[in-house]
Image (cartoon, rainbow, N blue to C red; front, side, top):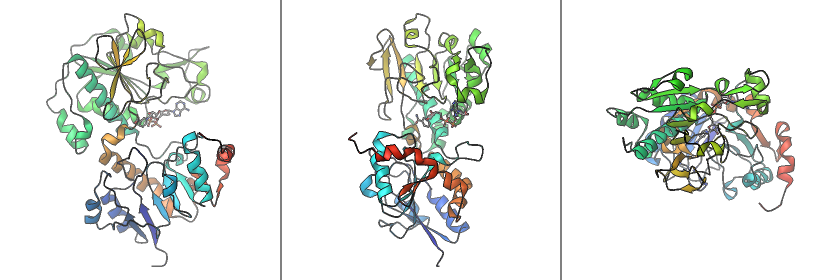
Length: 406
Ligand SMILES: NC(=O)c1ccc[n+]([C@@H]2O[C@H](COP(=O)([O-])OP(=O)(O)OC[C@H]3O[C@@H](n4cnc5c(N)ncnc54)[C@H](O)[C@@H]3O)[C@@H](O)[C@H]2O)c1
C-alpha cells in the first residue's frame, strides 16, 4: 500500500540496558487491526521484558534492519552510533534541561537530520504530561520501603518485586502478609503517589488524616498523605496557592518537621526542584526524637528534598544506611542508620506492567496525533527537525553549540 506508515520498535542499547518497550505484543496487534495503514516491526532483543517470541506469536515481524521504517520508537537515549539519519525518533532524550551527558547525542541528531520527538514534552492542553512511568515507580518504591522496614525491624519479609513475573504475582504475594503496627507518611499527589497509595490499599494499611496521624498511636499499620498544600505554606500569610507555589516556591516554608517525630517510614513522591525547600534539614537527623527509620525516596534527587539522599542505589542493592550523627553512607540496617531506598529506575522492576501502562497512554492520546500531517501536540514535543532545533527549543542553541569536553 502506497500510504503505509512503517513504524519500528527499536532495541534499547543504552547501558545499563533498559528492559521496557513502548508497545507490548498485544498493543502492536491492536494497532495493526485498528490502523490498517500502519505496519509495526520489532528489532530483536534478548533483554526486553516481552520476548521476541511473544511478538512473533502476535504476528509482529522481527526485523534487525529497520531502514524501511519512517518512525522509530524507543524508551531511553539512543547511543549516537545507532542513530539512523533522516528518521523520526520518539524516546526520552533528557536534553531539555541541557543535560551535559546528552549534548553530543543532540548534536548528532541535528547533524543526521533526525526528527526528535521527546515523550517528556508531550502534554495535554492544560500542560499535564501525557506519558510517564511514575505509577509503577510508586508501587515498587512503596514496596521496597516496606521491605527495608521489615528487614530493619526483622518483623516481616517481602520478596523482591523483580522476581515476580508481573504485578499480579506481586499482589498474590501480599495475601496473608501481616504487617506490624507502623506509621507511614507519604508525600505528593502525582502518579508516584498514586502508585504508593495502591500498595497501601492492597496491604490494607489504613488511611488517617494528617492531624490524627500526628497525635495518636495505633495498634495496626496506618498511613497519611501530605499533598503540596499540606506541606508548604507561604511564609508571609500562611496560605497556599498552587499556581503561586509552582512559580515562586522560594516564598514557601515546609511544614513537614512534626512528621519526623511521628512516623516510622517516609515515602517521598513530591515533585522537587532546587528552589523548593527540603522536607527537613540534615541537622534534624541527629535529634533524639527523629523517629523515621526508613526513607523510600522515590522522587530521588541527590541532596534534594531529602538531605540524607547521598546518591542513587541500584535495583540489585536498593538500600543503604546513613549514619545519623555523621551523615556517612554505610551498610543498611545498623542500629544508628536511617535506611535509604534511592533507586532511580524503579519501574524496571515491573517492566511488563510499566510498559503496558505506557503503551496504553501512548495509544490513547498520542498515536493518532503522530499519524497526522500536522499536530500541535507533536510539534510542541518536537525538539529537532530537519537539522535544526524547533522554535520552542531554540533556547538549547548554546547547549548544542558547545563543543567542550564533558
Ligand atoms: N525513582 C524513580 O524510578 C522515579 C520514576 C518516576 C518518577 N520519579 C520522580 O518522582 C517525582 C514525582 O513524579 P510523578 O510521576 O508523581 O509526577 P507527576 O507529574 O505525576 O506529579 C507531580 C506533581 O507535582 C506537581 N507539580 C508539577 N509541576 C510542579 C512545579 N513546578 N512545582 C511544584 N509542583 C509541581 C503536579 O501538580 C503533580 O501533583 C518526580 O520527581 C519524578 O522525577 C522517580
